[in-house]
Length: 308
Figure 1 (cartoon, rainbow, N blue to C red):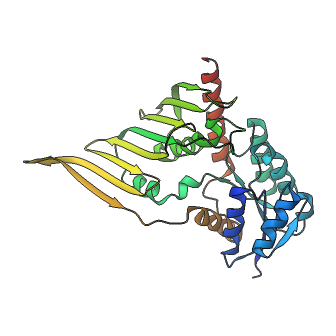
Figure 2 (cartoon, helix red, strand yellow; figure 1 turned 60 degrees about the vertical axis):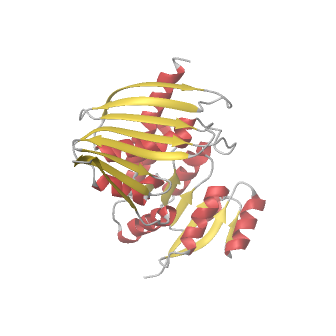
Figure 3 (cartoon, rainbow, N blue to C red; figure 1 turned 45 degrees about the vertical axis):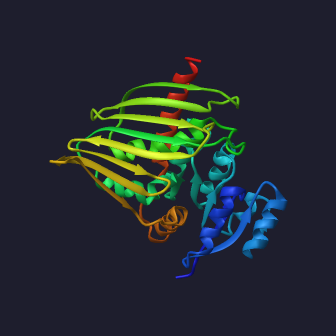
């Protein structure tokens, strides 16, 4: 079987990494890279030894699959172009800027029988995969994601930039839907929300607390699960895990710690998309997953802004 032909549209900071990952999969030929800035497309294309494409339309007929890593505002326009022309799409999170746009993309992919994957990369984080294996009779989940301020990504709220990861994890780890929530947040530097704290009550009875900030003095990424008989903690940045259980005698709390092997989550995400296209199997994170996370984010944003 001949190699699948791929391209990346939007080769800024993150998109350049996406393009590099395609070059490391033997089932794919990276045909070219495309960017709204011709100079950026030329630069990355030269680095990778592929063609520089200056108009996304010019990729039609040249590729079987694309990754869209351009700005959130352009996700809909680009993904729609490719889906309409029979090309499988992996789009960075969030799936689109608005819910109607996301719904249209999901419906279009279904109508055309095409793969629409969404880049919720934390599904490929080995520490989160490990944590999920140990979840049983969970009562509460806490997800914290703090980052220092960067102008890149500040064109959207911290909800769409950071919390969107945790919203996807909320559904994946809880295997339940949201019953109700309370939320608060603030705008400190940008015109969009920079911090947010949300408490969710899931239909299963599980309580989930998410705290995000992009104006923190340091980086923090961790998940804690309180469950019957144990407390689990995963540092999703360092890949360290801890489990606290009842002990005995002089050791009232038994503490177990371990570290999972570091893996290239973006490579795994890329490989999974290629595998789904090659073998016509489901994507790990599909368009409906991306739409579900975006819907929840929009509800949270509306609730917070109503209180500001």
